[in-house]
Figure 1 (spheres, rainbow, N blue to C red):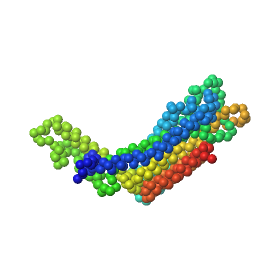
Figure 2 (figure 1 turned 90 degrees about the vertical axis):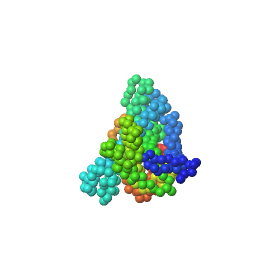
Figure 3 (figure 1 turned 180 degrees about the horizontal axis):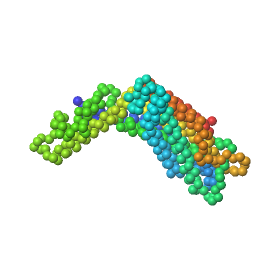
Figure 4 (figure 1 turned 120 degrees about the horizontal axis):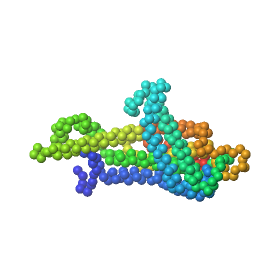
Amino acid sequence: MQSPGSSSFSAPGNGITFNEVSRARLIFFFALAHAPAVGLLLLVWFATHKLLPVCNIQLLFSDATSSECAPVLSNGVELICVMLGIAAWRIAFELKLICWEAATIVARALGLGSLRLGTADELPEQRPYTLAVFTAFMRSLVVEALRLLSLELCVSVVIAAAWGMREKNDIHASGSNAQCWLDIDDPRFILTLWLGAGWTIAEVASGSWQMIRFLPLLRSVDDVLPELEEDVLEDYVSHPALDVPPAERMSSPRQLSRSPSPAQSNDSDAELFLASDCSMDEDNLSIMVLLREKDELEAQLGEPLENLSAATVALWRIDSVLWNLASSLVISASFSLAQGCSSIGKGNNPNPYPFLVFPPFAHMASMFSILVLIHTVVTAAWMILLPRFGATTVTYMSLLLGLGLFFVGLARWGAVV
């Protein structure tokens, strides 16, 4: 029995109550864990706006009105780049199932086991690592291809904006220096950070929303784990809303306990009762789906969500920030070198390397392949090692790798000496 001053939260469709103080504490630490990631994103936004006065837009468009990027890289262009990053991440997320099925088909075609399409529970136990590697490779390939495509779209938007602001009417072909250099005054560096921020916002927001949906189901680590899923499943199977006729559902003991007396029953009450019963079954089904998703996530993590500390969640979000920014910086450096730099002083170089808005993929294929390989190894390691070593250990190792790749990306752009 609870004291008069205590409050509780009841999950719909079951009789389990959660202490409101414990739940509020979980929500507070969950929100606090996102502060470092949000701080890093704000730092990136502040740095990009500080770089605008020294940014040279003529590296992309030699006929620009001025050399400063501020007139071209407006808030609208920034919003477009961020939204492109969010859209690219969303497309990659929606293609996860297709990547899983494609990896299964490839593994089966190569004779790596009697794999078939289906869920993880249906896969043979002898080949889990093979499928994990193939799935990680397919996902990494899709992600990096979308990252490269979104970067191309961002640069095209900026060139179009600069073209619209030009003063000259006689536009001539832009050449470039024989060797394009990379530096932080290149507008593509700012575009890359905006694009990477869009990828990060989408990933962090998606992970946060997933955790928010599970908040009503979280329990205190001191509580006995309730067999809620079995209760809901049994209740739903015993009283399905679609398969059992209304008369049979009304005659069940659970329904009779809620049915009105014969003197008060009429057609309107019966319709209201049936609607209420269907609503309860839908609530039970939604809880069952949430519990199943929570169980699958905990199986991947190797521990209950309640055991995840705020520090682990914070490392998780920082890891997302670093990996998305680092991957964007590394691939954009190769893309910019392949694209070239618009020459400001023409005629000095007898053999100028042309500035290509759409550079050939062969000029950046090597770095693209390396990045896909790195992501494949890390993603497969997450899938294989996470249930065995726990979220904290694997996240910390991934964070160190992401930090190293982030500095590599900055070094390629000349931001780190």
